[in-house]
Amino acid sequence: MALLELRQVEARYGPITALRDVSLAVEEGEIVAILGANGAGKTTTLRAISGTVRRSGQVLFASRRIDRCSPEAIARLGIAHVPEGREIYAELTVWENILVGAAWRRDRRQATEDCRRVLDYFPRLAERRRQQAGTLSGGEQQMLALARALVARPRLLLLDEPSLGLAPAVVSRFYATVRELNREQGLTVLVVEQNAAVALQASRRAYVIEVGRVVLEGPSHELRLNEQVRASYLGY
Amino acid sequence: MDWSELAQQTIAGLANGGVYATLALALVLIHRATGVINFAQGEMGMFATYIAWSLIFTHGLTYWLAFFLTLLIAFLGGVGIYGVVIRPLQRGGQLTVVVATIALLVLLDGLAGWIWSPEVRAFTSPFPNDLVIVGGVVVSWQDLGTIGVSLACVALVLAFFRLTRMGLHMRAAALRPGTSRLLGIHVDLMLATGWGLAAALAAVAGMMAAPILPLEPSFMLTVLVYAFAAAVLGGIDSPVGAVVGSYALGVGISLLSTYVDFITDAPELELPVALGVLLLVLVVRPAGLFGRPVTRRV
Image 1: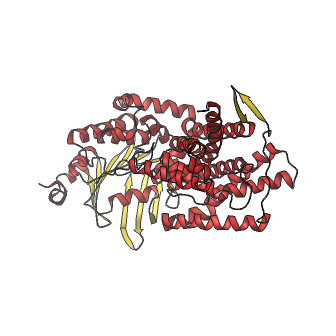
Image 2: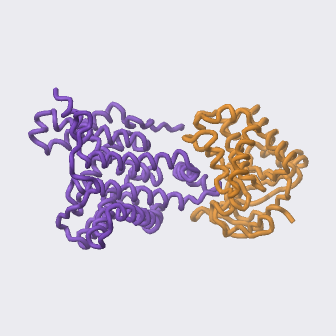
Image 3: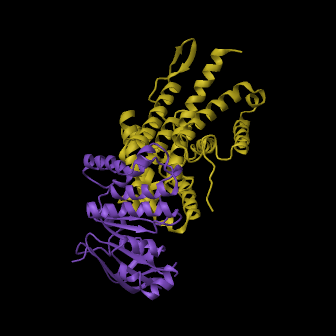
């Protein structure tokens, strides 16, 4: 049984249909990528999972229907959504940002301990823990958004365009961290990317979305060789 | 120059400033949580003050019991206003909410006149009417008490936001509601609490102002103008700025009306002159003394 499953999910913003028919599954311990052009529905797919867009069809998480749940309820079930553009609290300090990530946890002592531990994992953030988060560089802000998601101890991490606006070296450091978390702690990740080359490198399987539909899926190493993917998304 | 008079006028100004500070802090709270100026903030305090008046004079409660009971009622009232009026209207945009607060102002005003009649009522002060001499300066217990209560309220609220977990979650919810929901924070609950706190602060301002200004349905309107001016002076998004701005405004007006002859002769010039000075400050520092100018990346 997959950890996450979408069955014929549709989503709309007012009169505009953004997802027509998306079915996909993510197994526990996998890194799965969703590729697609601008406006294909990648972000909406993540939003349909975390409950921030009106959707129909079925979304199952750990064998439970979550397509009627509110975003805060879904977060509390163990899905951490790192939104596009990182969305850190620029006015709060780095440390406060991380504390907010553990907001809903009832085991407060353990939660604070996790917040401290996550700083060991990100020494750059530890150095800047008292700074306002808005003063961080783009790469550091992306790390902060990841750290803030991790202290909720999610079972599933949703990443929306983490490479956006970052230098290539920073992007590969970010994905190295994600893969390490996946390998060492078994973190399950569903990542949306326009940067197909990076996403196919980091993931085990991938889905390609075009105008609100899944048009292609398979192991990432195979998709990398696929003619259509190469022409449309890899550019060679 | 008579130094003891200067000290006396400063203390009187700080007492008024304390009233402005509690109301200004309420305005800042709402502005951060909902992004609008709550024009009904003063009338919410007025309504709460009438409730306190009823508790004391009709039901015979002691002052402080009535005071704290009123804070609780005001808090629940603020939560109710958020839930029933503000939250459903937020989809309509900020202008809709602003208009709703103006409607609320008129509504509370009329309701208070209908329930308690528009005639002027005397409100009690918890502090003795005596004067006390501190270091050669004659001050009233009334002023000292008002300063003490306002400082305590302001300190409590600021400490709550700075030092507690819930305070942090409320700041987060106000800064980025959407993202905060993704992190599992009940944003509506946080914003409702913010409205409740603001209503309680307004109640304090009303109960502190009522012994000085006579209690009648529109007695908080000038206080609201001053509090709004003080909040803008300090920076509408800065709680500390609003508080400092309030005390500065209180002292400034007190000194102006004592030492500037044409204002002493014509007290009706107090408000225009004070607001004129405020405009000048804003021309130099548009974001207020403690505010940061808004810069957006494009």
